[in-house]
Image 1 (cartoon, rainbow over the protein chains, first blue to last red):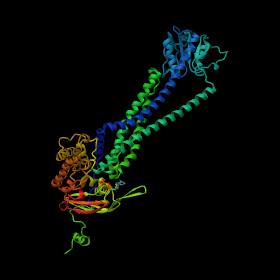
Image 2: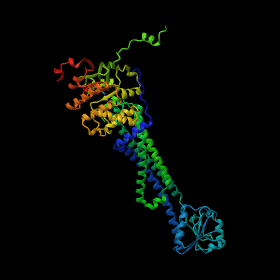
Image 3: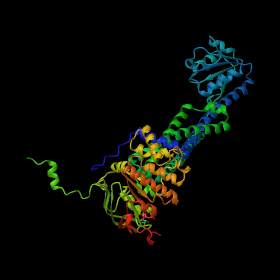
Image 4: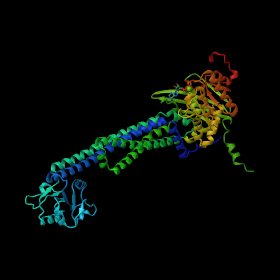
Length: 343
Length: 258
Ligand SMILES: Nc1ncnc2c1ncn2[C@@H]1O[C@H](COP(=O)(O)OP(=O)(O)OP(=O)(O)O)[C@@H](O)[C@H]1O
Ligand SMILES: [Mg+2]
């Protein structure tokens, strides 16, 4: 023999088969490695989902509080709403809270009359029956008006002309905005937040964002450590095996490729399972804390899916990054040295 | 008449230094291990040759450098100085891919500790070097079964190494070493972890392989039976080959062997 040919380069498919075989053969061990990735990503998604849920719930809580307050204002003025009839007018698109208030009123009262010619109603029809003429509204026990004074000026002046003497509940009017010489009997449903309260709220929001960033950062760090550890373990405990593989003719490239493919498989399966488990665990936990109704009402599934996708991608990326170093160490080891190691 | 190019070249090139039947030739091998400031001279200029188809035993006290010599002539690590020729090729000239090819097809390794991959079945262990050689799975599987039958383990192909006795594990290792029909088998104390009887079976198996397939077998050993069975014995002491002899010329009753 005068020339040694190069060891043929095994195609990716063959390397992948070797990896899959290896993973299947040492199933127990692969499960430990995968669960390392799984736990890391589960921790990350559980934390993220928790914040997502709490954020949604806080918003939902706010809306529910608003609806409760507005209904209370109305009942304290009119007595029980049962059997009453109300006239509705919207000068602007109703907000989420206002929509729910209307639904609540529709549930409690006997009749809702909706004023004709309302520009805001094209996209979101108000509940209740439509009366053909504004005059029909005058029968109602009270008016519920959505929008500020300016937005509903035309309707209000109609009421004024008709000398409407019953309460006119304004969803976006605060008590400061009414004056004693108003001819209409205004019932302001909105509460204006003071300057300090607004500032406090903004500050609260800011610190909340820092806190989320901080906790997510820590979670990411823990995830990173878990994955690095799992991958390092899975390579170092196989130094001897790598030495044997090289004795049997595995090229460095094959060894590296084997570990990278393995990390890809471990990363994808671990991250997928981890993201699902983490999210489910977190959702189950908050389901117990807040109750299923509030949770379902407040959860933004689109955002949650985006978070999960990001977590899976992060998991796969981290796993591969964490595998590159041990894989290159393993692949560049002198066979004799690898064989001597007794890990 | 024009002189052909080959003729011309042969006039100017020095004649081949080794006769072509030297399947392995080591010249002046030294190996120094550095651990911090401490230096260990595992080999201090060892030279040896192995003839094609020969059963060569290497003998020497513990720490004399046998395993180091094996690693060097088996292309498992590089010497500090000196040359190793396998089939006339200076392996220092080979890149990692070519070395992998060499380890895959030219040399079969047998270790004192078997070094089977524990999580794989016997069959998978034997198929591994075949996979590295790019052999097609179905063909490799059949060939691997034949190798296992050859070493007398045809009925145990699907067992894991841990379920086998030491002797059986070493048989699997021998089948694996034979996987790609190598020209050379390097065995570093293959019987050291086995009892006397099993060790003898291993020696017979290696002798059989040598006879049937004309493999060159180089084995480090203290085993008297193995020494007697071999064609030639080399003595290594303190990193040098100090003596070579045929078993017939040796008095195995002398105190050196007891
Ligand atoms: N990787 C290494 N790093 C440092 N020193 C080493 C290394 N390998 C071997 N040595 C040293 O080199 C010397 C020769 O070791 P080697 O393993 O070649 O001896 P040996 O003849 O095979 O011994 P034994 O019969 O016990 O197997 C010993 O002193 C050993 O401590
Ligand atoms: Mg040794």
